[in-house]
Length: 255
Image (tube, rainbow, N blue to C red):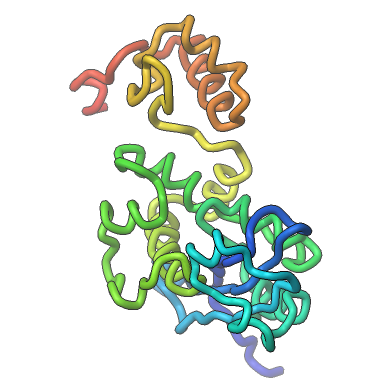
């Protein structure tokens, strides 16, 4: 018998540039990726060089989206179709255990289960809400400059709004999240709506949810935004369980 070859557990971070949203009206014009692997020491680190592929979206590039990623029709005229490159990027060998993206719901529209082999997804945006609630914002780039992840090469993460640099930056957030919480926990958080640390709008804008009056909380429980509804429902359940209303006291912070 030959010795069994062990493969690192890998999560592949994906970033797409598209003609817009959603499909099938719009299509992919670039895909980028960067892997994060579990090391022998039990820590997660970036793995490999990552990469990107330009993709023919099969339709003209709207000027509004060109102004974001600067990919022109002539840049992708001879590029392969999405269905011809998607599986090799989304389902790599060694087989990955999950896919990840920042605000993964966008990528999931184009990366269907048929293309991903039914992969689980980790949304680094939703996980950042849970793990780093003090961030001034939760965009990929704000987290980059607020957190200053170790090992992130500034120029390699530029230009923003291109597939590989964005995947590279997201991979640093994912690495640090994986070193704070389990894969199963990140996937569980990613399947639920976002748990917002602060109120987004209205008279209570900027307050922590535990600070607002119950009358306001009840109104947020019927909001059209699923993240706001979920957060309000979660806070109401915490209060019904005897949770304190108001700012966290210094004593609570020590517990």
